[in-house]
Length: 556
Image 1 (cartoon, rainbow, N blue to C red):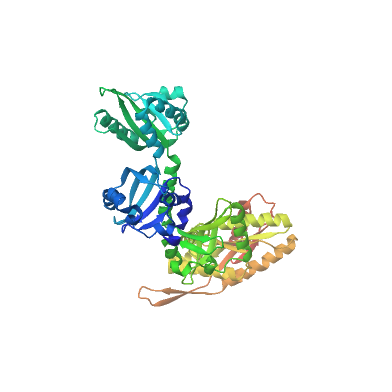
Image 2 (tube, rainbow, N blue to C red):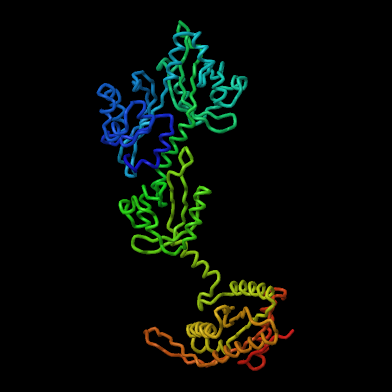
């Protein structure tokens, strides 16, 4: 990777104790961390963009060529290699070549992960040279060491191994290595042990997992050799264990970071001055902007204009003080379309706790917002008249009751029933009946204030809530009477309902009807909403029984 392309993982890579580099399929270096450059004593410009042959030289390149061919064919490589450091000294390394395979199976290059295992190799050599030196190295080694019986029991362990695994000396000596080995690694380990005993190999090295005493998993680099008598009889195994848990976690985080960057969520990274330095493909898909159109620019170029200055001041205050902000924000696509995002903004700090980057991750929630609006309509609105339904009406009445109780004023509820609606349906059909209900809802709305609520209660029943009238009960009744009479007269006017026949011709149905209206007052001291609805309903039935086309009031 070069330039800004690798910047978002450079911080992680440079913090690793091991060497990390990425080579393209053309065998030119795209990325190298600090440890890699320091080992070879090279400046970045002497490595990045140059070939593997330039870095290694012909002799070392020839040694590595079989592994390079194999990894470019898609096969991961793990091997030990002796390398000369920049200061001229020789170091032992354990190298992992990991192929980079795209979604279509093509090899794009490979990642090189190299660990310095010089200490392990030196200790191994010393074991062979001198038993006395072995004992000293065994007890004082910074890495774990153990003597293991042919049956797999620990015979002797050092303090470092106890520290790695969390057991004390006596606890480990009571265990076998199989008991603490991860099941997925055990067969590989046992296969190597079998080859040692059969003299097919002299030693082996592998990465494996142990279970810590607490139950968590510990990754180690295990080196094992077999001690034999002068007659060649196996005596015990010598194991060297280096804890590589942190390195494996960092390696995994690098892989996750690279994979996560190309997710369905858009990612935008800015510098400390909020200028864009990196975006992913999802950003282009969602916003419509190509990377070259936004790099070096401030994200405010996508400002929708829907948010006040105070909104952004609050947002950045939270990011600076809490480290992150999560919420909904409206932005503008390249096309000019305004759309909603669900966004997380995080501040990235360096070792001195200064902000070095900001990372924004967002998704387009346009469809979610549409679905929320649709669900809200289905839950709270009548699908035919688009008036509030019984559920919303009940909520509105509860709010009005609470408000009127606090303010000491009255409100009114009106139940309205259309006279002769069944006759209308039977004569002209349900289509005409539906058109009549829609027109009735429109006429009622034209007679009331915006603060009032009219709802379709069911069938041909409509309910009206006048939320705020007067502190005086008689004046409130008079105000409600004016509205009720206005509605009654409005609904008594002739309806002209235009029906479209099967042949697409228009047919006009003329309907003259009336309504029966029941009215009751409330001031918030009633038992509940249902009690108020029942009072208005009772008054409405008295209006019907009294000859219809009239208004009746509930009196306690």
